[in-house]
Image (cartoon, rainbow, N blue to C red):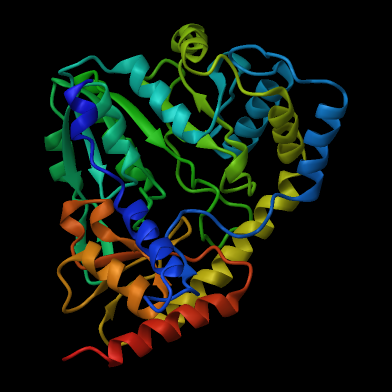
Length: 399
């Protein structure tokens, strides 16, 4: 067994969830009615029109292997979707730049497998979803982290410090914006400076832009600033996406990569050795999702914004909470004054308050005392209930 595997840290989010499940099974111990906000997933089912497309595909007998890179119809739809989304920047995207993957996680792992050799210098901007540190670690990389800077209830980028951290030996820079867990978004100027620096050093950028559409901007149907807006076709850039968040398809396990054509020509080999292909019926569902995206995604974003505003209004009434409004994503990342062990705090909230949140240290050692709250909830009342439980628990604690 590889020592790297043995050394991988267990997900702290899973540790909290397991503590919650254990408490619910023990009579007289903890809370059996935990309000669960720990995972990055809403509680609304995939739209019926998308489910119907998958059902029709199965009924038609589409239960066989597909092309390694995905159904031609889906790749064409992704090219058209991406071109439309970034038309304001004058960008055009051909199918030769796309690969369909078995989820966003798979997309990011494929990017790591394509770029990283053991011992390579890889820089990851944190706090971040733990997979983005774990995946290059699995590849044997020398993983360094560059932390965003917390100020009050918001995390931001020290651009000069990041540019200095990108060295000529840095093989890959991995960043996620809109960011899970902080809601931080890159500005266009920041992206341009990062891209210019990586061109100088020959560094690949792996941009996790899964939350690109979950962007709370004044303009309707807007998306967050993307590296695709300012890059050239042959730039050393891979952008990872997923159908999970913007189309309510977490359980379908379907994502995609946008990359230089030269790399895409080889990506099919990696897909073959990982999953062979994504299933036909999930890809038919994805085609339907893209075809109906103008109805699905804006509604999702509007509801998430209402959820965000409702939760933040409640948290603002608690004097011990430091939080600011996230620019994108589906999380409130907040600091609870007086607490320095996020994992212990999250476990206590599960068992003592019936409130399931993710510990900040799951995303960065620098996030002690912080908690992540996924606010994607069909019922806004669940958010109110969670705030109420937090408020009641805080009153029971010694000052």
